[in-house]
Image 1 (cartoon, rainbow, N blue to C red):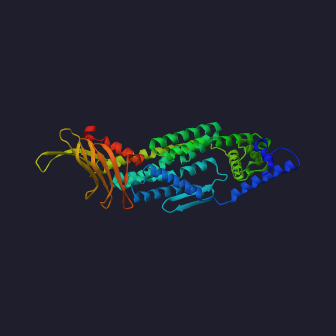
Image 2 (cartoon, rainbow, N blue to C red):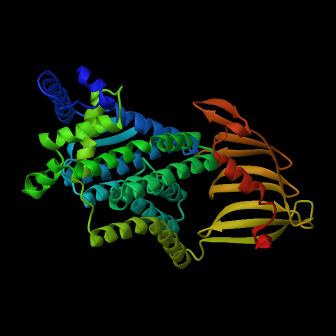
Image 3 (cartoon, one colour):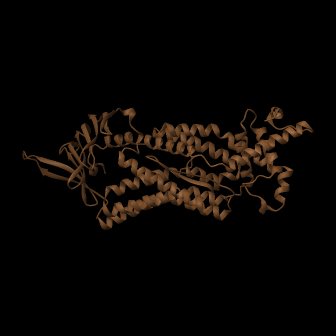
Length: 466
């Protein structure tokens, strides 16, 4: 770069002779870097980093608690999600569209949008989570009709990941979608949205105990000034004579892929004005491209925007509709979604015993002994995988979890043991690769802690709690 960039906050100086020649050389360097970035193949390293970061978040939220089968399920869910994005990018003419298959992790899709209209970009954002939401809803109804727990587990995974991606936070699909259809129309509206989304992400991360989400929110909060500066620069360049003359002519010749030299120089000047030295030429070129894309960007019309928003909110409501539908299907086909009753029986010593039995779609699901006087859970609890095997067991003492609580896999082997002392969590042992790993309370994921707290509050039969 020339020494002219050191003056006027880094912007090329106005002048003649050697100074003007230096300015032209500086402009050409930026244009050459833009062309280099445009023609180079997109690196897959970034996609691996993003995917690995997502998996770390899923791990924090306890989505790997199913063991190996859970990891395989998660990879399948992510693959379907990315296939949706891939289909949309191919359909709408994205350039350098690639899907990377990463062993033991899943897949990631990359592509460049070149002269893609706003509504198409918004549809690409929705095509990732939409298939997963639909599949999850179908699985929920299938579970209601058959009572198979594997359908329910799959439905939960599909719905959690894809509905989570629809939330209005960067860099989630929901955040990108809402920016494209709504908040890209005004720089101040965009700024408020980005600040709100970043703060909300910090709060969600804190509430879920997922510190990676909170860190991502803080990074987004720190970086909100960059898109605001780019939006401001785009607005100012639009008001220049070069830009007005360009858009007053034949607009069919204008596209977001090719930056006209006259407007490009104005943009580069604004980049150096808004982002003073030191700044790398690759960043200058990147900012220049983003400003030009903002200048060319045309938000969708009223009807297309309204239609896209209806689809967006429909994807949120669809799981609720599927839940209601599954309950109806279950009620019709299986005579009750979940039926709970308390029964009396005679113990071997002749005394009266009481049990709470829960039936899932007509099949015995759990059986808990109840104290006939205090009417609190007291004794053994068994959870059945089917009529011939159990998936878990533990003991209650006067309405409190007590002693060992074991979870079994499909082969009947113990894979998790949780210890309680009169309702208080003591420790948990989990089998990982054939070895037992002990975990304290602070080592558990948010979902695991939430499940334990919810179960600790159970205490007495569901019929009495009603």
